[in-house]
View 1 (cartoon, helix red, strand yellow):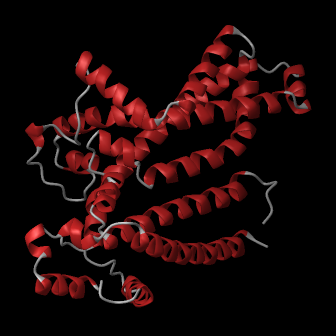
View 2 (tube, one colour):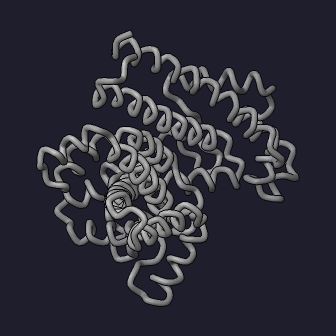
Length: 338
């Protein structure tokens, strides 16, 4: 089987996965304890049967679950994710508003985790069983074991409240609240508008939550790179390279590291997909208006269309990243055969 045929098969499988996700998400979101009427209507409105009946008819709550699901899927195939009960806006417009913030945050967090994970992993493997190796491994284990919400709270307390060297919550300072977004991406819009003061402020607000998100992924990458590099460094072809008189740095960086990165590629892609899916707790703690924050607000108000839209987008992002990782394997590693 060639790469093209494999990719087509994976795309078809991806569609089946997304259909399964919609079914599971629809059933779960409509069977959890709670009533969207109570969550979205006031006490006065709830006491009026006419208002309740009109509300149920407006959102299709008076129909059976199978009917609601078929109507939803029919609209979804036409690009309509429904209207949010909470915001009264099309869900797809809400996702376009909140997803760019998560995309920027996840991209920065992934870059930081890759950079520090590679550096720490290489150092730990080259200096195996030495003091710096034990120190780096302790950092990586700490990053993996620390809950993200606890790390986020401690980071805010230390760097914002005590030291006052990091900004508080939000995506921008109050001074720039009137800045109009064209694409939804602060970095792109600030550069295109020539507002480098806004770019600096956006990155300033982004760095602390990005470091919190990068902590766990950095620890996993560090341990994976160390393990893979140690395994590769014991191979015969590296002994041959050293016997030829090649510099140790060249041996490690050119011959060992590239082969050691192949297993690590899976972590790169899936971690990025996971972060793009939205980090509910971290975004909520930092009051960062991203996809995770939107999903949290939608869940607390039982906003079924918004919950479905966020779930489908998260599943799509994760599945696409998984597909890209698998396809990339066949491109960078000639030993892979589909």
